Image (cartoon, rainbow, N blue to C red; front, side):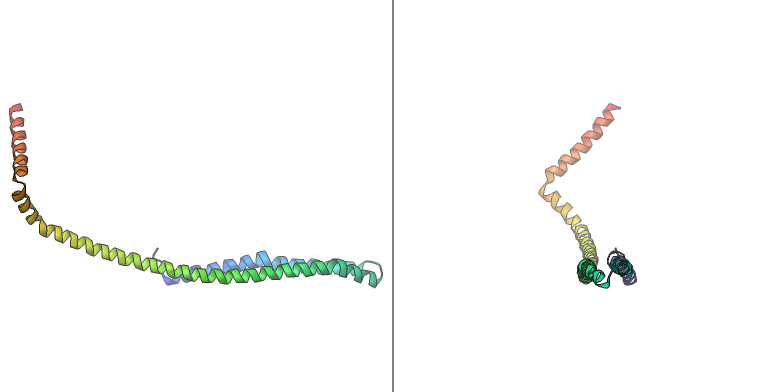
Amino acid sequence: MGSSPEDRQRLRETRRQRIKRSEWRQIYWPMIGAFVVIVALAIVLFAMPGTAGDMLVVFLLLLCPTAVILYAVYVSLVLLAIGLGKGDDYGYKGLEKLNDLAEQMRGLTKSAALVVNEQSIRFNAALAPATQAMSAVVEPERRDGAAKMKTGEANDSNTAE
C-alpha cells in the first residue's frame, strides 16, 4: 500500500501506453482499413469497363455515402476516446490524491492509537495499587471470602490425601 512516487509514475506510464495501444487497435486501424477498402473499391469500380459517367454515378451513390457514414462514425469514436481518456486521467488523479490522503490518515491514526495505548497502560499501571486498596476497603467480605475459599480448597485437598 505504501507505493513510492516512482512506482506510481511507472504505473501511470504503463497505463497510458496500454490505453494508446488499445486506441490504435480499436479505433485507428479499423478507420484506416475502412478507407483502404473504399479506395480499393473505387479503383476496382473505375477499372471496370463502362463509361466514366456510369462509374461516377455508381461511385457517388454507393461508395460516397458509405465513406461519409464511416467517417462520421470513426470521428465520433475518436472524439469519444479522447474525451474518455481525459476524463479517466482526471478521475485517476483524484483517486490517486484520495489514496495518498487515506494513507496519510492511516499513518496518523496508527500513531495516535499507539500514543493512546501507551497512555492507557501507564494510567492503568498507576491506578493498580489504588484499585487494590479501594477494593480491600469497599469489599472486604469479597476479599475474605476469596481467601476462605482458597484455604478451604487447600484443606480439602489435604484431607483427600
